[in-house]
Structure formats: structure tokens, C-alpha cells
Image 1 (cartoon, helix red, strand yellow):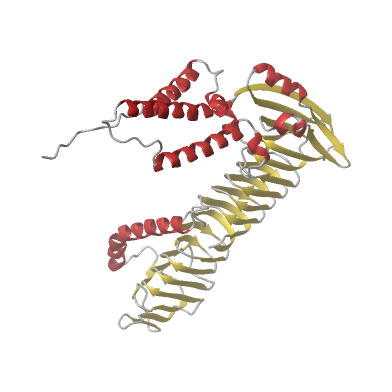
Image 2 (cartoon, rainbow, N blue to C red):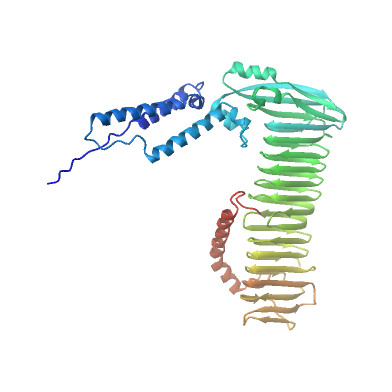
Length: 500
């Protein structure tokens, strides 16, 4: 008879003790903020390996005393991998927290969120000023912190600097504050905000400077904020702003506004002059500009324009847009573009975008690879209209008294027309339904073409029954298609999420 002996291996309590210790350490910090658990972990993490080794010795001794138990293995394959991972992570934490990481790491760790994990923060305020001329040129470079600029009637530049210093104690923070020197120095025709931040211990990486400047109204400025927001209002002169990791807000400027961005949002309002924006970021809102607006780059958020008196240009990896005299609004998102109140020519080349124009008065040219296009004219057309979509529906609504020439073709779809006349021919059968001819007394040429989709030529305010039914049944389908496009675009461009 075979005898089976039930045996087991006693589970180690090492990991249970580790969890209890870590939980107690972070809990203690909640009652004593001066304790920094990550600093303790960074210095003493090798103790974990020592405890682990002691635990292994205890398990080995236990196995020797109980030979009836299952055979003991000093290290399993999974534990070897875990040990290597623990060594790597422990070394990285030590390098980061104890600051030597910054000497060799390509990763940028200069941010307040990171410092706040390991240090307390202390705030100090300094105020100083410098007499300047009536039209000074100001240069400010701030590595960490916000920059605000406001007009003042005084003939000087007044600076209010809020210092946020991350340190282990208030005495250490105050010592750094005393070492930090700030001044406004004149260099030729320019005034430069200077500091000895780089000369401080650790290169001043644990110091944040939020700067508020009061300057003469006719100040022109060059402002750079590496990690922080820029806010500027009410100045006269050319303004050049660079924000690498922050938002930009500009209002009430008389003169050129030039913005370069590497992230964050941008809001520009009430500008007497031109606006230039380039780089990449998130949301953009530009409104009430008397000159031209030029935007180039990648912006995966919502892009909005309103009341642009002259030319609006937008360029990205998937969209080329030019619009003249935008008296209404234009809004772009991932898979859509909507505009109202276009008094001048409109030229758009894009892909994967549903387009809706209402109240246009001039020429329109649209090329879209995949998306529905809906146009509604404010007045009878007097300039050419040209729309091309490879996949998508096209609808054009014109006032009843319009005169025009039409050449519309859907290669694998359908056509619908509310207009009629002896010179207008509508062919709904076959592989390429068409609308061709003229309405009224001639007029501008209208070209509409799509490979897959329906073309509708409608009388403004007199939507046909078939068109209304098609809109009602197709609305849910178009929403579903838009969601599919958005998901597909996110998967194709993971680094930037999406581009307009």
C-alpha cells in the first residue's frame, strides 16, 4: 500500500511585515508633516534586502528542523526577478531623492510636484524696482514659476517676486532666500531681470519664483517661462512670449503678439494688431483681433476663433485653413469644424472631419477625405463654391432667389435637389447620380463631388421631406462614426493624442 504524506511549506511573513512598516511610516507622516517617508526609504531601502535574507535563513532553519515538510528552495525564479527589480528601483529612488539623479538623468524633474513629495515648502516675498524710459524693452526668463505683467503709470519697472522654496526646514529655506539675489539690470536699450539662481545649491532646482511686474504701458517684452504660466495685459508694443510647460493669457495689447508654446492652453483677446502662435499645446481661444491671426502646430484640444478682422490662417499636420473676415465664430475639435459668420473667402483642406458652415457670404473651397459637410449661405452666392469629399455627405442650402451654375456628382451615392428649372438636370439613377445645369440668370459655378455619400442641394428654409427624414435617421449614425474616428486617431497618434 502506498502512503501519501501531506506536507506544506510555511509561508514567509517578510512581505507582511514590509507592508505593515510602510503603512505605519506614511501614516505617521499624516500626523507629523516634518517626516519625509521617501527620504527615509531612499536612505534605508537596502535594509529590506537584509530583512529578506534573515527571513530566508529562518525559513531554511525551519525546514532543517522539519524534514517532513516540502523540500525547501532558497530562491525561486520569481524571487530572483523580484530581487533584481528591487535593486533597480531602490537605486533609482536613492538617485532621485538624494539629488545625484539629476547629474545624469535625461528626464526633466524640475517641477514643484516632485519637490513637494520630499520637502516642505516655505514662502518669502521680495519687492524691488528700477527706473526706466517711457518705452522700455523688458527681458525675463523664469525657469520655474509664473510671470504676470500689468501696465502702470509710474516711470519704472516694479517687481514683486514670491519665492517658494522646498527644503527640509524653515531655517534652510530662509538661508536659500537670503542667498538668492534679484535685480533689474540695464543692458543697452534693454532691461533684464537677473538672478543668481543657478549659483544656489543644487542649481536652484528647489526654488520657484512667481513674478509680478508693473511696467510703463508702452513696454515691449520678451518673456520666457520654462515651467509656469504667462499672463500679460494692457500693453502697447511688440510682445514675444514663450511658454514651454504652462498656459498663456494675453489681453488688451496694441501691437504684435508672438507666442511659442510646447504645452498648455492659450487665450488671446482684444488685440489691436496681429497674432502669431506656433508650437504645440492643448486648447486655444483667440478673439477680437483687428489684424491677422496665424496659428501653426499641433493642438489636440478645442481651438476657437472669434471676430478676426483680417486673415485667419491655421496649419497643422492634417489641416490647412485660410479664412477672411470672420465676424462670427469658428471652432475645431478632433473630428469636427463649425463656423458661423464668414464674410470673406474660406479655404480648407483637411481629413477625418465633419464640417458645418453657416452664414457664409463669399467663396468656399473645401477638400475633406472623410466627413460630412454642411453649408448654409447667408446671401445668394456671388462667388464660386467648390466642395470635394471622398467619403461623406454634402449638403448645400441656398436662398430661394439664388442664381448659379451647378456641377454636382456622387459616384456611388445619391443626389437630392430642391431647385428646379428648364436649364437644370437632375439624374438620380445609375452609378454616378448628378445635378448639372443652371438656376436663374447664371451666376457663380458650384462644384460638389463625393465618392460615397449623398449630395443635397436645398432651398434655404425649405428642407425637403426626404432630406429631413435622412437627417433624422442619419444623426445617430454620424455620431457613432465620429466616435470611431476619434478612437482610431487616438490609437494612431499616442504621443500627441490627436491633431487638428
